[in-house]
Image 1 (cartoon, rainbow, N blue to C red):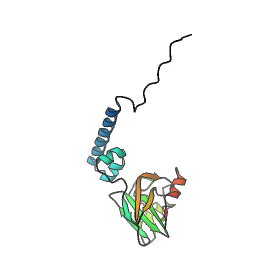
Image 2 (tube, helix red, strand yellow):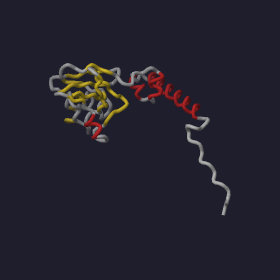
Image 3 (tube, rainbow, N blue to C red):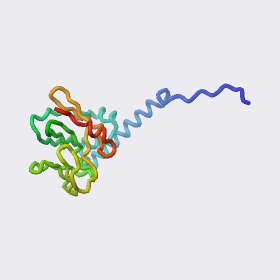
Image 4 (cartoon, helix red, strand yellow):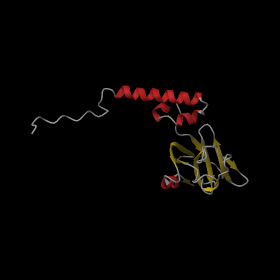
Amino acid sequence: MDSSPPEPPPPSCAECALAPERRRFLQELGLVTAAVLLGLGVPRQRALAMTPSLVRARLGANDNPTYPIPAADGVQIDRDNQVILVRWQGAIYAFNLSCPHQNTALRWNAGDSQFQCPKHHSKYQPDGTFVSGRATRGMDRFTITRSGDNVVVDVDAMHKEDKDPTGWAAATLKL
């Protein structure tokens, strides 16, 4: 039987002398990733959305776009932030611009009051509910909050109807 004292547990990463080096490495890796994506023609906001929030902050990215609460039912498309803002029948929704089927930018058809994917013709109601086509779920919703007369969209909190039905249903602002 060994009577020697037990070895102390290894230090946590926060206590590790390499933690600052690791953090800097990850920041630089994120910056390189963003630069490569931009070089490949990925829109700035989409490239930034694919990098860690620490990198986006360093690049001065606006993580949470803010929009005035729409005065009437309708759709606003913000291509720079890849956000669709919808006011419809007493509620506000914020969606990812891309179709959940194959990431093609969705279009609003005012005549039918529906979104449609131009690639495979999936259709969605103004609240993002799937209607028909090749897609198998509703449009991806972002978490939104009200700040005075504005809506703040949390582009880091996207809810997919099939994987997060509770979050998807809650990503609504009732007026």
